[in-house]
Each structure stands twice: as C-alpha cells, then as structure tokens.
Length: 329
View 1 (tube, rainbow, N blue to C red):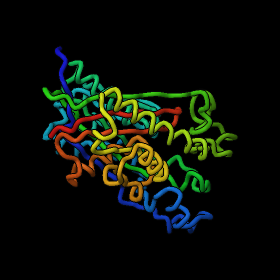
View 2 (spheres, rainbow, N blue to C red):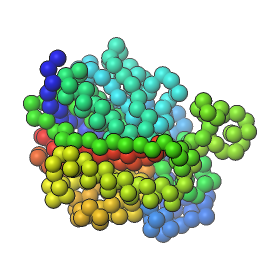
View 3 (cartoon, rainbow, N blue to C red):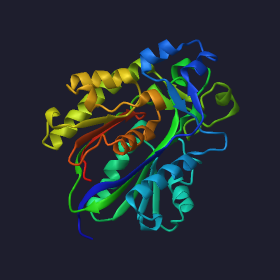
C-alpha cells in the first residue's frame, strides 16, 4: 500500500445531560464557587448516569463524527479509543464501540495514557493512514472519570467530568499532519494515578476501604510539570514542523486547569483569541477534552481552512505530547 497524506474529515462530541455545578459542590464539600473558579476556571461538569458507560458516550460522539464526514461505519478500517475508564479491564472499549456501530471484524484497540490519550492516538492514527496501512480511522477520546472520583476529596472531586470527542481521519493528497512530540516519565507514578485495581495492588477490601480505587493527585507537582511540558512540547512540535509561534493560528490544549493554560499561553505569546478554552463547561475530561474542544471549534466556525493548530496535552504517566496540524477543509 502506498503512503499518503492524512486529514480530519469529520468531528463530533457528546456530554451527558446531567450536570454538576460549583454550587452543587458547595453543598457537599468545604469549597465555594469563587474558590473553584479562581483556581481552575471550572463552572460545570457533565456526569454520566449510573447505567452510562464509556462506550455509550463514545458511541454518540462517534456517530456524530461519522455523520459529519459522510462516512458509513463499515468504511472505517480501524477504531481507536483513548480512555482510562474503559467499560471493562478487557476487552478493549474500541471493540465494543465498533460492534455497536455494526462494524465487526475491523481492527480496534484502546490507548491508555490518561489525559495525553488523544495526542498519542492522533499520532498513531495519522501514522497508520500516512503509511498506507489504513485508509480511514475513527479516533475517539472518551472518559467517565466521575465514576473513579472520591466525592469527599476536594482536591480531585471538583476537577473531573465525563464526555467524549471523536474524529474521522482519512487518506488525502494534502497532508495535514506536520509534526508530533511525545514523551513520558514513569519514575513517579504516585503523583497522578489510581493505585489499586491493577497487577501491582489488587483491589482487596483493605485498599477499597482506603479509597485507593479513586484518582489521587499531587496537585502542586502536577501543576508545575504541566506548565513546563505544555510549553516544551508545543515549542518542539513547532520546531519539528519548521514553524514558529507566529505561524500558529490556534492552540487547543488539554483542559485541566485554566491557570495552566493561561501560564503556557503567556509564555508562548499566544493571545487569548488564539487559545481555545471550554473548561468552564466540561471540567477535566482527560482524553476527551481536546477532541471535544476541536469539535466545538469546527462546528462554531472557529477553525478555518489552512489554519495551523497545535494540540497539546499532559497527564498520568507522567506523559505529555503535542501535534502540529494544518487544517484542510
């Protein structure tokens, strides 16, 4: 199979109807709307229902992206889901989504690299298309993080929401993929993790009672890491694409904390109208945050043909990454 370029031909996103506001959190935690807004930029988070799993959210976003691209599920060669909240430890959530779309017998797999998931997934998916292995790929970032949040822990309970975003990538004579910069440092996994439930620490009664099935984060350490890596990954990705800050039309960062986004944007000399922020509506949706933001930007007309975009994220691992992309209508 011959190599080719790649472009995104369809976008879609979905967030559950139920919403938890800062005012709701004031009733169960020692916090306030002012405190949360000042420190995170968050106002609302969407929350999956008891019977709503990650594949359910992913399915709605996937159908929206397929409709936007004008593509039938059977025309997709490979399904990729980036998530740390899969329906089950196995099988992969991507297999379930493909089946629900009626596209059995196609390649499907998950990527588990936390909030960096969409960046890693975009790099992998674009590479598979550009190398000629597949013609069309459906990439989804989907999370139900509220199911693994300790509602008594103010440090994390205010941060996370549920949602899904999806993109269809197709072979194209015009190549939108300009560069990628990925990295990780697994020397301190305890800074951001769910401790129990894997092969290191089984989820036994003692660990369950200790709340080790929930997200734990060292906020200050992660904050410092995030700002540094967002800046570094963006600069390296632009350098690989032989571009500068001045060439960048839009920065779409992972929506973890507005102060992190603002600090990185200031250093990168990016004016606010070139930085996409929707954290006030969704909170931190991990691997779903960037594709949700992209879907909203495309549908609102904020993304224009020829725009140079950097997608940049960071998360558990610790991990980080950025992709430089030239939008093609």
